[in-house]
Image (cartoon, one colour):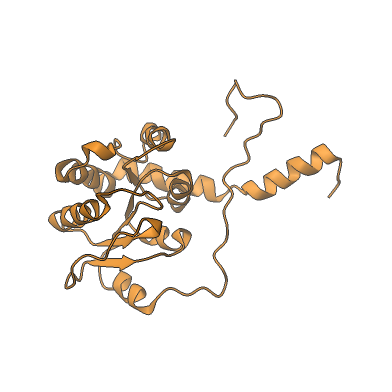
Length: 209
């Protein structure tokens, strides 16, 4: 990616920086069994977003997935979303998990559009359904929509079952959108943002490899 024309000379685009999953990390056996028991689920996470209606949003999301015949994995994150009712074999609850392990195994990701979460979803090559809450999240939501790797974002204040259902149908079934997401993921995985940044620093310091 070339840098924007209005950036100063000393600003650079390196590509995303990713932290590798620990080599000895292992997913819960129950999660592995869930993933193997059916079609790839939809990942759902709102990261650290604090919202007084967080549990209602989680229930709405789960109900919409059920209505669409989709399986789901909810990652509670820092916001403390409570586990929904027991007895649903098509919905799995997690408090936390490395996103770069999980996202390549889901069919799409419903999330808040935080830069870090979005970066991992893009790298995984799966479509995002972005429900921005605050700050820079609406900006990132629009960018992935313009790139054609996500349906139109849903404002947090406008979230309802119909809008989420429409977005899920696009993210899961639109072959053109899914193809663009895979292609972008392949491109991003070919980058090494950290190595590029180190090379730039070495160049400015006059350090030879």
